[in-house]
Length: 99
Image (cartoon, rainbow, N blue to C red; front, side, top):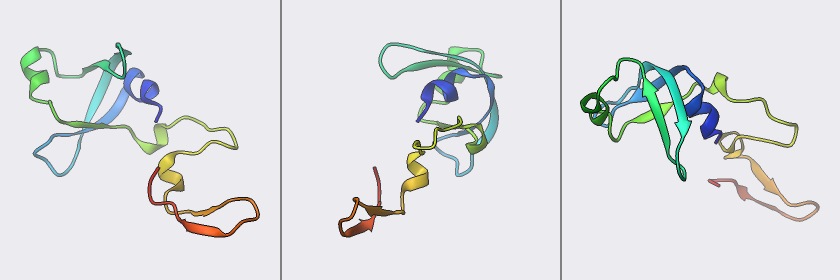
């Protein structure tokens, strides 16, 4: 899911707070990978620990236009969910539901 590009490259993102239906635009100032699957990010306007703690449980979105270029045999998971699954010359299976 290209987390390093989404969470380390500065630019516009969208942030949905846990108690809100719609995300709001926010600027990612910087980010760096930590141990494991954790990232330390800096968001514009969030300068203190208290402000950051209010964002706990939020979801940070990147625009679909910002996703990286793919090779011919590479796909985003969201692009293939719902497509028919066919294994060489064998029978068709159900639509892909999730991966």
